Amino acid sequence: MAKFTVTQLEKRVADLNTEMMKHGERHENYKQWQSSRNYYVNKLTEMDEYDLQTIEI
Image (cartoon, rainbow, N blue to C red; front, side, top):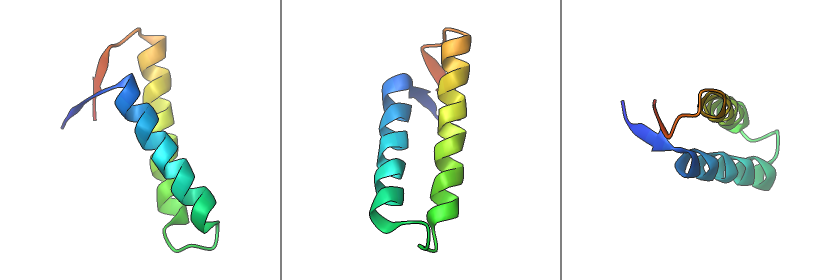
């Protein structure tokens, strides 16, 4: 497990969004990218909700 900051998670979400938009829904990894993106967004929401500076993933 590693600790991540909001900035690090936001970068991961942005990178995944870029890949998804660049390659489109027909790409073989699209669903995996989408799932990962949603996971990180949920972690960002959790960090905001509980006012956390870092979170372990």
